[in-house]
Length: 241
Ligand SMILES: C[S@@+](CC[C@H](N)C(=O)[O-])C[C@H]1O[C@@H](n2cnc3c(N)ncnc32)[C@H](O)[C@@H]1O
Image (cartoon, rainbow, N blue to C red; front, side, top):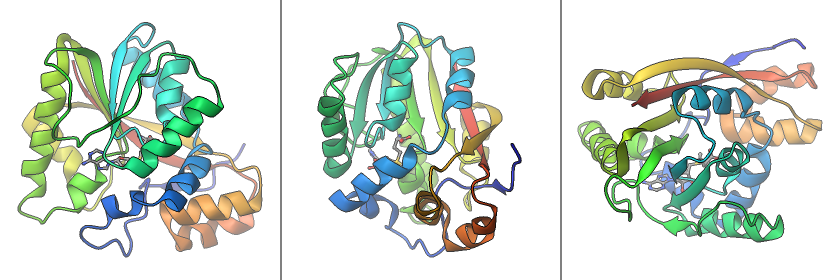
């Protein structure tokens, strides 16, 4: 398989104005579209890397910003039990539909409506508190002089809920317009690992829809003649344990 391009961002930042990230999740149509297209991103290398940080088998994980549950499902498949949280009732509605539809009588708790900064769980409760691509609204919907303060509130809350022997894990894109990852490395001492992940598309239409949604029209135009080759993206994992 040939890799055709390296993308630096999960979500297209072009044209995203202040207070735009969280707004997009508050819509049923978007939630359903996200749920469908998110599945073309292969999570295997991310799961493998997490397993090296904290063994997933039997772990109790709180996933903040769990969305429609695509990543939560991978965690459950790897042997963890997951308590999903999210601020968008629309994303959580799709989560619940997936949960019922696929009859996953697994290790999911009922997803809870919650903001990253107020996790409705006791202190030292989880083995792992994890975010998978869910911090953009905190980083970009806040003004320049406020986002670091808000990120610090999120990290503090993640640490509060994690057992002393556990881990806080953040999966994100390494090259955003604001130096979020530098901030959590410098201020909070997070460690970092970068990994290559692939997107595979079953049809040209699915490739167009996914690339346009997640990376913007320009990326789709560049990639389009290369369909059906895979698209490679770089994901980062930051952790504290
Ligand atoms: C890109 S989606 C990621 C969903 C899931 N983690 C995944 O990997 O498929 C980001 C999710 O974070 C949620 N989110 C964004 N800001 C949030 C906040 N401040 N508190 C709770 N959830 C938030 C959104 O509603 C959305 O469902």
